[in-house]
Length: 226
Image (cartoon, rainbow, N blue to C red):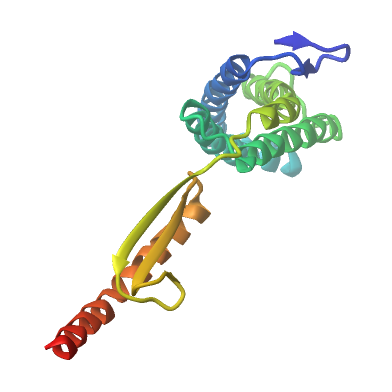
């Protein structure tokens, strides 16, 4: 990756493979941060030190556990879609949101940590652990701030083509497209998003519901022909 003038990364000339490598790195970083924060907070709590940490800072630490987990899930989904050559606008939005949240969280870390100083006990090992949480958390969000720039470049690789699967059977349907000759057509767009999968399931369910009607029509047609 190429570092910009102010420490950010410019992705204007980066390949998809380079973006993919960074996403993999952020994914692994998120796992590491999530585990580190959970272990450290558990230890501070068992040492009865969390009550000494300013409330806003403690909440920020706990929120980092949740945020890093959400980032892990989103980055995993983006990774899969890139590998399958199914990059969608949703992937771009998810990556851009990771960058925006990280930028905001990085600023929060600096503001909240420096808002109060009287509680700090530099010779206390538990304070050192707390200070480490601050350092690691702020560094994490500063790193993932780059996701915004990566999202802009990833947009160039969005797959605008989708495959269409058509299922045609004899019969009729109401909301399902009806063709000539009592044929029922179900069109399903192939796109790896939860919305499309839900729509596909709805259409298939509707199709199955229409089977009884189809067979009834077939039997009536046979009686008429007889």
